[in-house]
Length: 344
Image 1: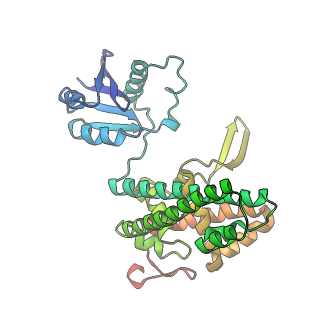
Image 2: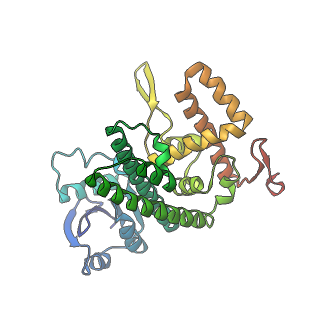
Image 3: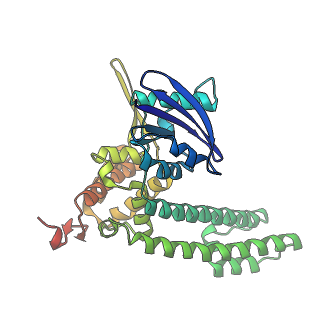
């Protein structure tokens, strides 16, 4: 008899609801370590279907269980709010709800990316956090200058030479001197480690399928390629450009009821860093591509800068989609000329 297994997964344990096709159910909690997962696997059947929410250790659970069952579904929690909005929030109730919706085939699936994409995404996230910390420290130092009535450009402090020159040009009290010395030490460490991460990210990204395709697009550099590839994953997961745009969160919100339909601002769903990277690449690409620049300038006059850049980013994303889908490599992107081996 076929079974549907709903899993409520935690870092140290998981609760499983075994739902049979005749409606009979059994609920049991297992420890995740100490042989608990292995014991759970011994009790599964080859025809079982398993479902669990996307969590930090969901990939590990799926990788371990997948060879022993018919199907493993990882739920996209932002699209499945039955659990979050439940007034009875217990592990058993959550596992039962997952098993029930799995039996009806009504669970929204999350995308599972390759191990290479996951590793690179982790490096990119760490770099982004270090960059934000560096910006925060620069803001702190800039605020110290402002507090003393000194006006300097924040950009001057970004280089080591500029930081040292500006700090040495003012008399600070002893406590401020200690604070600035500590910040200076941290800034040097951040500069060094960010460069190290960028070097590793660029080198690893070159080994991924699609790197040569995206790097041939004028405006997309090595780090941006890495961000794009890790966010997109397998391009085959997207049926069309609209699906990819929705995944990046650059499609408008739509509210429709009866004969009333309204479109609002973009959804901004998905990875913020990927969306920001796409916009930054677009701002560079319009300098080189007459087509993108013409589209941007035309729309800017009618709709304003903000809407124009988002619409142009959507155009660039369309190009990225077709570039990856068709394995294009550009010889001359501004004139949309492909390498001879890509021309049909």
